[in-house]
Image 1 (tube, rainbow, N blue to C red):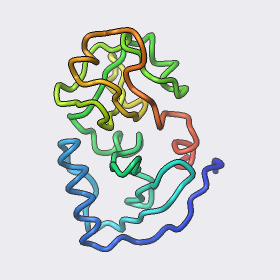
Image 2: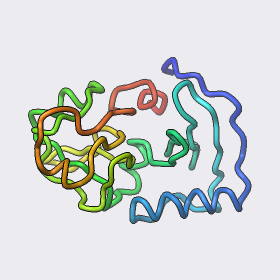
Image 3: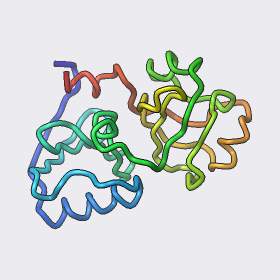
Image 4: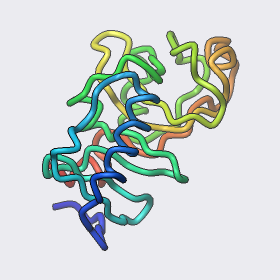
Length: 163
């Protein structure tokens, strides 16, 4: 078990779980956990986490719900992605922020401040979750500097809790 501290885990009411499910589905464009599944909310060191099917499938960062990498692998959303070239993969998986020149494709609906998921160009698998620092046009322009602030990546504490 990794050293992420999870506290105050409690079962969500069905009404609250349904509204969380609807929020995630509208953002990501895919079906997520069922409200029949046991859905729990808990506090962790950096953000709140959402348990579904007994695993951490989502997180709430600055009041915005989003899927973790495990949730992205499970539900395969077609929206809110930022694709990076293969040269950026080792850095992104180690928790580095995404730089503009490494971006090869973006979802055109992304706005500045949106939660996004980062995937690689070859396999299209999730590498990280972050907050977009630019709109879709700004991300596509390949302008120098930080484009996405990474908050959760493969290999971090949150990822290792599921191993």
